[in-house]
Image 1 (cartoon, rainbow, N blue to C red):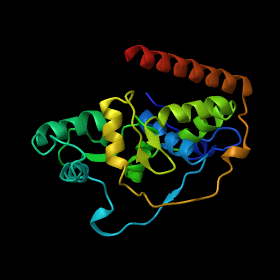
Image 2 (cartoon, rainbow, N blue to C red):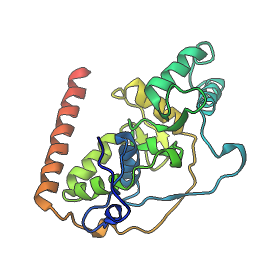
Image 3 (cartoon, one colour):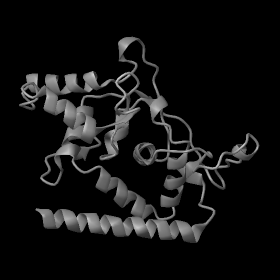
Image 4 (tube, rainbow, N blue to C red):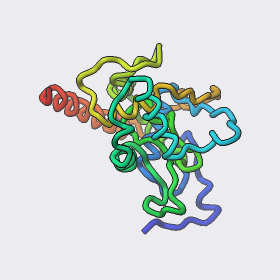
Length: 228
C-alpha cells in the first residue's frame, strides 16, 4: 500500500537530489516520457495548442489511420477485419486509463515499444510526475549506454526524414506503432531544460544502473540475432 504524504512531506522534489514527485505512477507512463526525453536530448517539448475535434486522440482515430493507409495501398486487410484490428490496437498498441469501463476508458498513449511512441499520447492521461527525468539523469552517467539505448529503441525509423526504414528485425507491433505515427506531426515547441547540466547525486548507483541497461541491451540484441 502506498504511503500517503501530507502537503509538507510531498513538496520535497528537487531536481538536484531527486526529480520525481511523491506520487503513485504507471511505469508505462514513465517509459513513454523517457522516450521523449531521449529523443529531445533531455527536453520535455511543449505541445502546440490544438482546437476542435482533434484535441483528444480516440481509438477510432487510430483505426481511421489504418483505413487511410489501406486506401493508399500501403497496407492491406485492415478494412476486411475491423474487429481484429480493434482487438490488436487495444491489447498490443495502446495504453488506456479505466480500461474495460466503456463509459470512462480513454487512450493514454501508444505502448512504449518504440522511441517514437510518445508522439501519439493524451498528455493528461500520461503523467509520470517527473520519474522519467530521474531515469534520464541516471542514464546520463554513461552517455555511451544512453546513446546505445536510444539507437536500439529507434530501430526502423529515419529521424532525419521521418520515414520508415526497411528492416527485417522489427516485430509486428513495432511496425504498427511506426505506421500509426509516420504521418503524425505532433507540433512540439522546444523548451528549456537543465537536465543535461545535472549529475546524479549517487554516482555509483547510477553507474550500476547504466551497467544493468547495457547488459539488457546486449541480451536483447543477441536474442534478436538468434531469432533470424
